[in-house]
Image 1 (cartoon, helix red, strand yellow):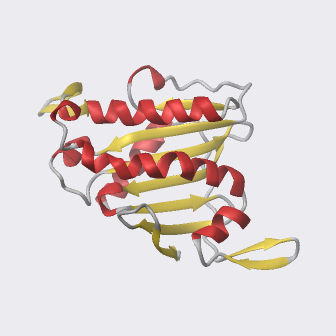
Image 2 (image 1 turned 30 degrees about the vertical axis):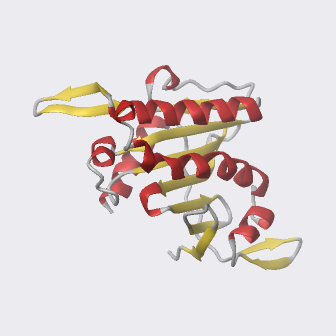
Image 3 (image 1 turned 60 degrees about the vertical axis):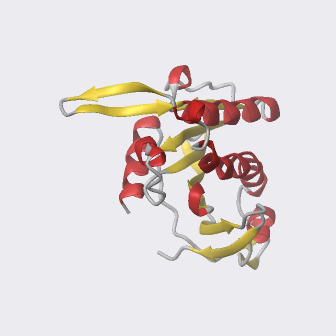
Length: 212
């Protein structure tokens, strides 16, 4: 719960001028008058509202997120820089793993989607200005809870992405990943919220609907 609260606070800072509107989670989506049960990830990727961009975001994000835990075994990736200092001392740091994850996400977004804008938590990507010539805004905090990531407190750090419709300034997709647990919490505007886990080979091992 603490992790989710931290993520919520971080997203509110990253996207402070985005209007969030809650959609009630649902197991069903009405498609051409027929009830479409979302019982598998395949159903979501093929039949949910915003299905095409959901597939695109998942294809970019999931493989990169699943690689994050192994970066801790590379000392070079654990080198850090201080981002903020409070009264009690250092309060925020970024490792090279944070920077690499964000750079890889940006690379994939820019190579595959020239109509998407990119915002990131780290460095110059944190610009907070909309590009009205773009269709969507891709937002990420590549590692939320960097100190817990370093300490291997694996229920207390994650990776976060969201996709925002720039014309409405409303998010259409949000994903919170717990990479060390291979677990992804996926929310889709107008469709519902789901929990997806992956096995060691990167295949879906479980899928469930999050109930309100």
